[in-house]
Image 1 (cartoon, helix red, strand yellow):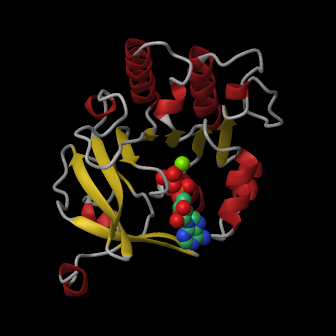
Image 2 (cartoon, protein in one colour):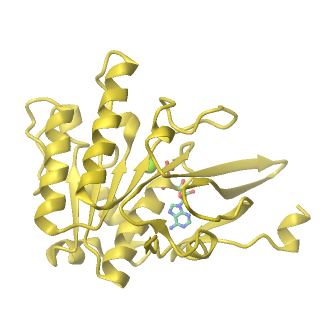
Length: 246
Ligand SMILES: Nc1ncnc2c1ncn2[C@@H]1O[C@H](COP(=O)(O)OP(=O)(O)O)[C@@H](O)[C@H]1O
Ligand SMILES: [Mg+2]
């Protein structure tokens, strides 16, 4: 099994070198756990360090704000976009029924999930993308009336991504304590891996952790690893004595 290095510090060593190539991994967690930063770092590092073109599909945050926030980590997305090593597909503004100023977006005539899927495939093919991030699955279904519509869409999406050959990261949401990893309880069945981010508070302290819940054909760490976000991005830490005693 070939591996795709995430480039996220401390992570690849926990999963036999990276994500299984050509497969999809679900990244789940509550709000503010670092999912968007993780997703952007995956495509940024892919493009910058491994010369693998990537696509970031954003349905929640506006691309201009993502670019701006990333500069704080020293990640110049604009430059990679100009080199066609990274493209951002904007569904955030069209979701609101407004025109987007982005090169890759949807017509503002209303959000159409099938059109979005086709646009994703078109961009993947055109740039030969090896990595794709979808942020996020719950937003795909924001105007659906029932859960079976979103299930169909998730199935369609996973089928299309598998055919594209790209290694995908699908971002979803799960609240602490819930017994499912995606919002709809279907996401985890169509992926080959599940990574969960937690943000817990104990007393006056809060700490972030990363848990690899599932990674097919991989012997992976089963621990809850401390995770930090600093001016260089995300670092996943080994469990050492300092943390075990907490
Ligand atoms: N430059 C930074 N340094 C340290 N922590 C940061 C920085 N930028 C963002 N964060 C942390 O990351 C959080 C946002 O992460 P984000 O990926 O947007 O979360 P999610 O997508 O899971 O809602 C912020 O609430 C903050 O705690
Ligand atoms: Mg987010």
